Length: 171
Image (cartoon, rainbow, N blue to C red; front, side, top):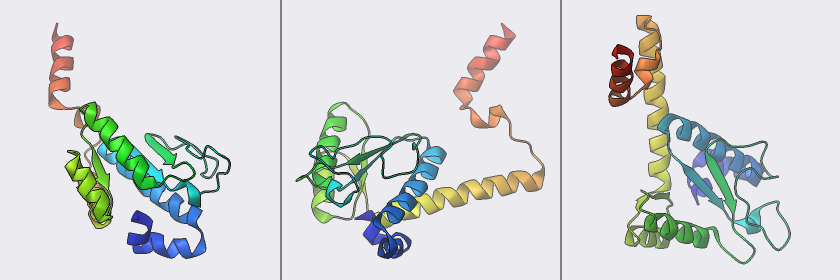
């Protein structure tokens, strides 16, 4: 339901479902890279280009051009909705004590997700989060470039890790 909720993706949907999916994946790859988080993207398999009795694919698929670093792409099986897969995955990861956030605007799914102990983001919320993250990174890069401050590894490491490295160097 994310594709139908984002105007840009919905417009692409008029041309091709796959183009719309590709654009969503592109946004999520960038977001994943910037936020250093794991993303599992679930599509309804009944609307995919996959055929056969076992439509559930994880990772790179024949429908998409090339691997997607850090993103698992899952197509639901025949006679199974993406919502069902999301519910199964939510329960699985909550049981293993992972922090789970599900992006959906489906009211039933939102109630299920919150009732399971996971967080939820609406389609609009995740779109705004992605835009905000991209804007923050662009601003940071612009500010660094205008100050002629080079990027360094120290800028990228958490302080506790940097302290450990410095301690080892002094030993």
